[in-house]
Length: 353
Image (tube, rainbow, N blue to C red; front, side, top):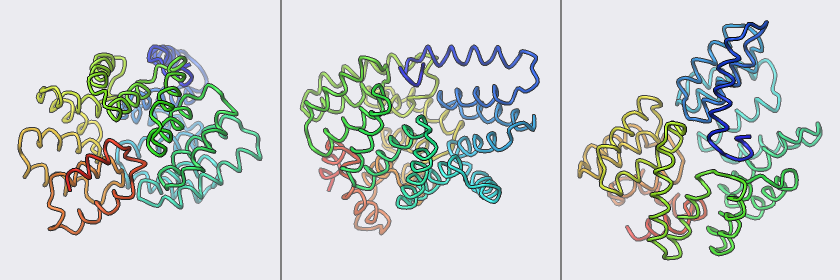
């Protein structure tokens, strides 16, 4: 139900039920533990997900499925060495569609987008040949994302549409098409129409965040800021956990609440020391005028460790482009990332140089 509607109460109810079931005597608890770990992942409770996945591993049941799950958790926590070791170990045993999905994610994380697409195309073909509709639908939406990253917008749109043929209520695919209308075709009104339709059956805050960004693009700044305030109020509830920490950090800084932003960023780093977490703390330092500390942290924890345009965009704002070859490389790469960044962020980047 959560996958269908993005309603957080469904996810919390799933957690409640799984917690009860794990305490029930049964021959094999591993499937329940794995499912509970996936619920924790959805809530961005990655350390708890790791604990539960390790409990599943200790049962000795469904080892490969648990190891694949651990690959997902290691990736989220930034445990690159552990993830790499496990992927190689699994590849020696069997290279199936589920492993290829993880290999594709690994390739994307290290900037090998061509390899990512190649692997995901293999997963798609496997899903077609075995008639696994759920896997096929998932493949289409992910390939829509990856082709968009590669600048192949027509292929991206085609894959989102294919996903909707399988599941007309796939709000994630609708959101992908709305992004194309907004960022590539600059048709904000049409994009908003799609998002309004998706919001009829999905409560995903991401839909509303994209609506606010489009309003900002259209000059309706007051409306966008009001929407941000509404979303912030909503996702601060305990049910959402840390699912929207990055948005909240930006919101707190924009609304002169640096203490809250600092607390959020520090906790995020304690939970998962990955580039996106350090980028939050860098924003806090910059808001306090501590450019020196921001630069040090960027060089230690962002440089050469992520290829995410939104994270890289923040870094170029407080370094001298003419002095550092790495920053020059980033700026050259960002100049080709207009679609991924969107018109608002891209225009902000151009305005700095």
